[in-house]
Image 1: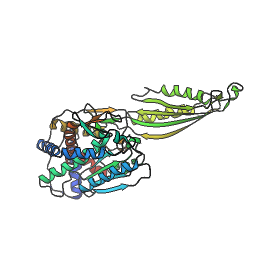
Image 2: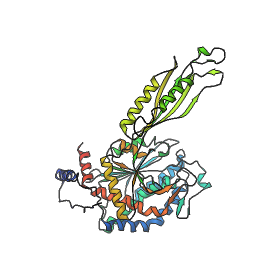
Image 3: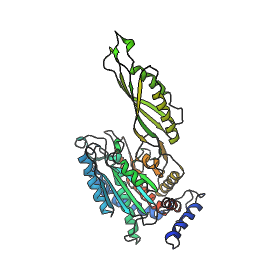
Amino acid sequence: MRRTACRAYPPATGADRASRVAIWARALDSRPMTHQVSASESSRLTDLLQAMLPDYLADLQRLVDIDCGSYTKAGVDEVGAWVQEAFAELGARVEVTPNAEPHGDTVVGVLGDGDRDGPTVMLIGHMDTVFDPGTVAERPFRIEGGRALGPGVSDMKGGLLAGLYAIRALRELATAAGGGLDWLPVGRLVYVANPDEEIGSPVSTPVISAHAEDADVAFVLEGGRANGDFVSSRKGIMDLELRISGRAAHAGVEPEKGRSAILEAAHKIQALHALNGRWPGVTVNVGVVRGGMRPNIVPSETMLQVDLRAVRRADLEAAEAAVREISASMTVPETTCEIRLMGRFWPMEKLERADRLVQTAIGLAADLGFPLKDAATGGASDANTTAGLGVPSIDGLGPIGGDDHAPGEYLEIESIVPRTALLAGLILSVGRDPMIRGWAVDRRGR
């Protein structure tokens, strides 16, 4: 990849500066993707983070050794209190959105303000795990064979900390260069630490969405894949519930009077599964079926839970329309069906602006001395929310780990420094990239 040195901006203020940035951004549209971090800066970030590694590991143990499942409010809020202190130490303005039981509070740290030049960068890391109280007592944090182990160590205490340490390293880098108090390399940085990602972010999505409205890029700090890949594309997901109503009757004495909801459900299941593959990447799965009371009663009620996924938003919308058509079309006479949308994440599509972030990350990784590739996945994350709102987003930027949600969950210790240096470099490069600065100008002009 060809790299271009960071341009020096001529002195300008107000509308003149905004105009120049927009012109530079348009001029760069046809040029190769590039990053804006020097090799010496990459090396310095690595050295700074290597020196911080013992503190990182101590903080990792502190957070992993807290039972903080999504429905364990006390534990999630204990993590949240620690995060608030970390944000305050960085000089961030801390915002806490209280949530009632069983959800922990949402914590946001904001650096910079709307009056600063440069793009707004959004970081997202979650504080909850999938594990029940008592898990920490059974298998607390430990280090074995170059791996950190414990509940939530990869998903995602490692990424949550990577965001904080990347910011800390950027502060140290600027301070060493004489940056003083004005060390933030972007116009504004917003870090959302949410309490409920493992259950679909029901209480934090409004907070994420509100901040995403003013963001130019979003970096989601889920752990890197076991092979080191990060994520540039995620399928969109719809959770749908179909409730079918028929008429009960004695199955042996007067079966003709009954209208079987289960029979109608069987027809619908076949029709729903026939949608698989109708559009590229679309999957439909009826994963839960509940109905009937006794074998000698014609069943009057049946419930289906349907998982619908697609790579592209247009295909997700088309597939949803087909599911609704199946719901409305009855095969068994005098039965009815009600359909409910239980949850939806729009796809995280790898569009042009997101691809610029992808190429920036790959170029930075090469300078840091490790190969990096992006990948697509069928699972959703908070990146679906930001991408669905039009914010260029990439995910899986945390340290490398695996066996998430399982007793053997691990984090590769040797990946902590390079992956955190990568994140710091991304933030630095975004703040200097004329094209991305142009996105910020366009957003403010809307």
